[in-house]
Amino acid sequence: MTSVAWPPKFQNPLGPLRHVNFRLLWTGELLRSSAQWMDVVTRGFLVLQLTDSVAQLALVNAARGAPLLVFGLISGVLADRVSRKRLLMASQSTNVVANLAIAILFLTGHVALWHVYVGAVLIGTSMAVNAPARQSVLPVLVPPKDLQGAVVLNTSTLNLGQALGPVIGGAAVGLLGIGGSYVVQALIFAVAGILIGRLVLPDRLPSVKQRWRDSAGDGVRYLRRHPVLPALLAVSVVPMLLVQPFRGVVPAIAAQDLGLDATTTGLLMSALGAGSVVSFVVLASLPPAARPGRRIVLQTVAFSVAIALFAVAPSVLAAAAALFVGGWLQASTRTLTQTLQLNDTDEAFRGRISSVWVVNRGMMPLGSLVLAALTLVLSVSTSVAAMSAVGAVVAVVVAWRAPALWRR
Image 1 (spheres, helix red, strand yellow):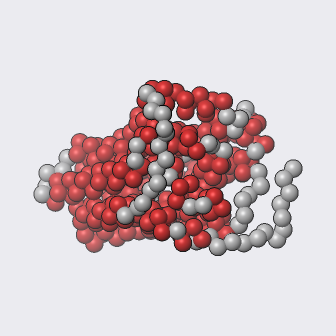
Image 2: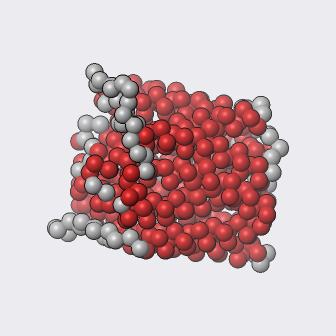
Image 3: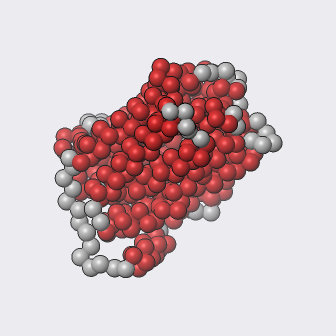
């Protein structure tokens, strides 16, 4: 049994930001995450305006996540073989181009649904390239004693982006229209790219160049033989496949069930980010949690329940409360998972193992396809609630069959 010191020793949650390179990466990633969450709101209203179809909205989100599944492992091999800075820059440039293209098409009256699909695929591809490069570079930006804090702060960019992005996106749609919102997104991505361009990354590339196939195969074998990582991956798949697809249809639930407009929808979605921010502050201020594997399992189940409650919430206040709790649990689980994954992975394999979690995020488009099919026969809120409830049950079953993670 792991002993837990009481009272806990608090630490400075912003300590890793004193390192210039990490500060540049963190600021750029915060901007990128905020712009991507702006896109969730803006794209939702664009698709509904073009089609008035919740099924199409779910399918567009599936298209956005598909590159994570298709290119995830390839991007991990890239992160272990080529300049990670170049990968990060390529990701930001793709985002700028995709958003500017949609903005121009919309403002000139030529936007069509297939344009939205292409833009979603491009943004998904940039996410697939970005994630393993960003995660695997952390250990070379800060000394070992600051790695855990850097992981928490790195994850916090996603959490803060969830809080800021929907509010900015909703306000931009309300004040500037859909086209104006896409222009703002492109500008934010451009600033993020400038910051990333200033990074000085001492990439440590392998001295012996393997064939790409052999490099990927070594990563898969390393994962299979690891005592904890396969179980950690298995329990991480559940919310991605069955629960996370809810994010793409929040605008539909807000408009159809709660009667909200774009601005108030952004505020509702920011509750998810607000919970994430609170989670970040708590985790960053406390020492490492005892039994992280067990906490990951329990929080995965609780997150699934929270999203099910959001879907059937009878009021805006109840929906916001459920999203706040869900954001807290989601952020905490993500942080604990990434910390456990990086700490338990050898440096030579960090890019490839991080990319497995990118592929894991690629499970979301498959879940979005299921959600799209369900909305053809059920209401969108009932569909989300049903999938989330199933997710809670499956998480329990997976954990029961993966005792190594429960004991970790």
